[in-house]
Length: 388
Ligand code: NAD
Ligand code: MG
Image (tube, helix red, strand yellow):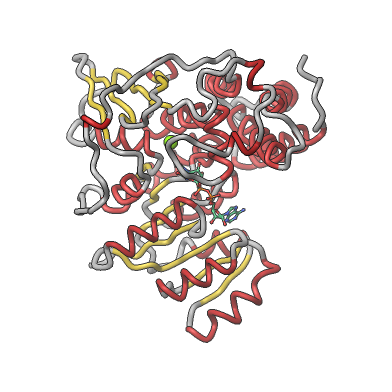
């Protein structure tokens, strides 16, 4: 039986690699639903190749273009975020891969869980914003969430066969990004082009900037907390510039299991889509002699304030991670527009966290209000010099 997959964000970095996996494993997968924000040309090309039952285009203004191309092929076409929430519940879908970026992933993920669909989760922001609500909904519906993020996939792979053994701690590895080793003063002048050049991974723009600022590792710590039910003190972050060890689990007898391999997202994507099975692949293999030194160092929380801010928000809990996420999405957008500098991203996030009222036990409505308020506060000031 082929697994029928829905790929949310099919035109992005994770989405296109997920389709590479589907293309390589045609006897295992069929595409039921493809969705994207506004990359109409690629969505149409993908739909013509993979012949999904339906597509959703986020940007309703582009609906006519998609209809012209795909209606004659018998593909159902919808537009807008409400349609996306409905489409993920379609009867034929066996697995929903959430590969869209940012807060926009939250509602469709909750809708898919509500409909009892297993989730392959790339969209970490969903767990950052609403980890408690999402994991609770998944437990209530008995829905599995398979991590796609490489570190979380590594931990998940290390836990195979260990379900009854408590985790003592996990070690999340971080590449350190393109600015590893720089001082805060040096970071003040780095450019957008430099920030977009990640040493080991090719990813969408938002996560690439988050990796450069180490916000990504903070978001991943929060993601890990919810996925693996961990306390703050059970999460250690270590910089490992070669990105070969994707993360580590330490058990209570002191034993550590690490998952290793060349940095290639196709592996965690495929594992999330086929768990507990591993399918054969022809991807390049890791060779120890080509990497004589695997190195490790402490993250620099003074230079990379975003990581410290994310860990603080995780400690605070409540709506703080939601506020952090919204402020960061605005900050990254402004940095990508070259409206603010690299370090000002942390200023925006810190200012927003200090300004938006804290809610200890937020409902979904509270989180929506916090997200909106945080975006408003973060946008209020796009100039430097409120780093008080
Ligand atoms: P990307 O920017 O390359 O792709 C994002 C996709 O989402 C695109 O298809 C886009 O059209 C769609 N999209 C964007 N906004 C939307 C909206 N409002 N409504 C509907 N669709 C929308 O991003 P990416 O790098 O593929 O990352 C996707 C997610 O996976 C992110 O949450 C990221 O943190 C996570 N992730 C990515 C990688 C990676 O290697 N790229 C690794 C780990 C985790
Ligand atoms: Mg990751």
